[in-house]
Length: 65
View: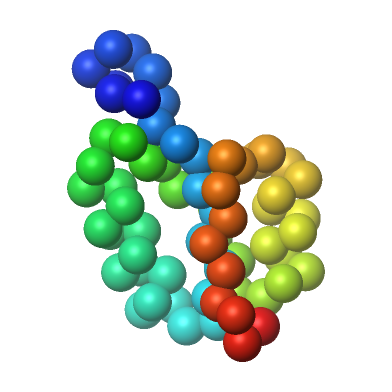
């Protein structure tokens, strides 16, 4: 949803063991008001904890984890 309408975009948790990859994806996603990164994790356990706490709309996961 557009932040111009006072609404937050789709909430996303990013999970990848490489910080630079997470940073790049976050930068791309947050350049649009349609997305809000609500958490970042470097491992699956942390990703699950973040999902329980932040209740994101989507999770982007590194398949090799």
